[in-house]
Image (cartoon, rainbow, N blue to C red; front, side):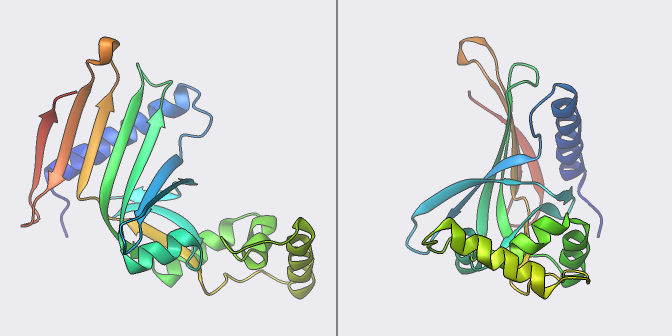
Length: 200
């Protein structure tokens, strides 16, 4: 499937800013806020790390049983926010769209690339559930170490990637006196992409 020209333009702009963020010395250019909402419209936001992006969308990884995983399965729409204050006079990138679970093959490949400690942590964590004491988690981690000693750590069945497929991508460029520049790329209900400027 061909990528629409305006989406290509938006993705090229993102890539250019992503590279600028690295050169500018941003502590972690992959850090992004992910906002979700429950079925009763209660919002929640947290910072995760971008692990892949292309014309299909923007990918991060998580436990499906954690709060964001549960909310995104029940209400598969998310908003992402990158903030790079060291780029130019400050840049934000806002992305909104539906969410899908990545393929098992994609999730397996990424999980295999993680440090072993992170792999074991994925087995030990019951993400977002109550932890009575830190020792409880440390014991679960030790249990995972024993279970997988001497062999590769497989991906937990409910640990996977989530891809946000953009319907909108906004580039927000900071300026003095709050006179910011905002460029919005958006897809309409027919799947056509459009570009327009927004008042600051």
